[in-house]
Length: 515
Ligand code: FAD
Ligand code: NDP
Image (cartoon, rainbow, N blue to C red):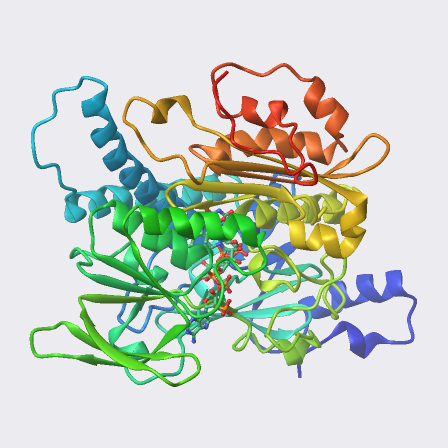
């Protein structure tokens, strides 16, 4: 019989915990290792939480296990961001930007020979080598802190006991008063014939040895737009399929500018279509049947690769959460409160697996660190889940912090808002005669008093780098008066933000001309 805290009801809580700790050492069953903290999932959030707890002198075990994709792609410790997310994506984004820069460079006087092409094998190998160095770095850091790392699949036995299943089937049992669920998510496959058999996801793309060739990207959000963006930038014939709207949840004026830019750069974007059947032909190409969302139109086209970017599911179905009394929402995400506590005492959830959290690496990391400090340093600091900046790397970057125009109107009412905006031309676009039609800024503020800033949106080169500092200002409660009192750094794109003065309400032309 498994000993549980609940079995000791009737004792006062402190005595109950002490007694339980003492008794479980002598309880029957398999040998169980005791830790101050067990983390299930060695990705952005789990590693941050585990390392922080170890730095605070606690004994920590981290379990991380990657189940291969349907076509067999697998990777090592570090989670989505390191292996199949932010890191390989940003490196490929950089590769695409370099391609643009080579074209620009000719106009800046560089003698560059004729045909410049990208070598996918070299690029993906270089990216994979970097990822492996990060995997290694994580293991070293765990080792230095004496964190016990298990390459094992974790699941709950009860609210204080985790079973780890190793690749060879061996089992280990770990016990703790504090267990953190940080298992993240994996790509969701739509339910049409050929999806799992012949299509890939972002989990495969970055580890793909052969060039993807002519590619169909399905999905109109972060992953779809970013992957389509760098594939097109690398020179692959790329079609992006958006079944409804691009970048759902983002400011839709900005989202339209992003997709307009992709179209202007030559990418084929098809709206209102979904794949319904994918079949592999004898020449290894994929015959794809596409249908309009209303079912009235069907077309077929052949591709070398079909990349599904149709959302992600939390990895909770095999955690045996019910054995520990941990509840999930209808999407399978773990229900948590503002302290990351689940419905089971002593069990917490952070990162992509937790309900109502932005699925971003810095969010998972910060919430993991803060949780460790609350558990082991008597800290009271909670994670703020609002005013979180983010960037869509498409390759022209769209970065934003705070409210979209739609959400600002819904929350404040249009009559209580001032929306400043401006089109601008980055100086570096002038000599190569690059089109700057989509380089645009929008600052949403309260209309009255000091005009507190509610949202900032920026499309342009290096928008992510620019936005980080403005996010600090917004976190500090910056107002429009403060923004416009700042002297710009000339000549930069960032200065356009402090120069912004034309309101939508005025109807004036927001096209910026010159210094
Ligand atoms: P993860 O990093 O997913 O880690 C969870 C780990 O737990 C994984 O290693 C998993 O294999 C393991 N695991 C799962 N179940 C078990 C189990 N039962 N036992 C043991 N181990 C288990 N965010 C950004 O901020 N910026 C970006 O530019 C960005 N780009 C992205 C690009 C792509 C293509 C994708 C898919 C995501 C991107 N993200 C980006 C999101 C970011 O990667 C995630 O928000 C972040 O990785 C979440 O961290 P996590 O710790 O919650 O989960
Ligand atoms: P999302 O859930 O954000 O978007 C899924 C997209 O797929 C939507 O456009 C959706 O369309 C579409 N879709 C869903 N099902 C189908 C279907 N059957 N056929 C066709 N299209 C379909 O998922 P993502 O995978 O793009 O992103 C997951 C999270 O990862 C993001 O929320 C983000 O937090 C994180 N991320 C962050 C990045 C960054 O910081 N730069 C980069 C990449 C990911 P519809 O709108 O019609 O439902």
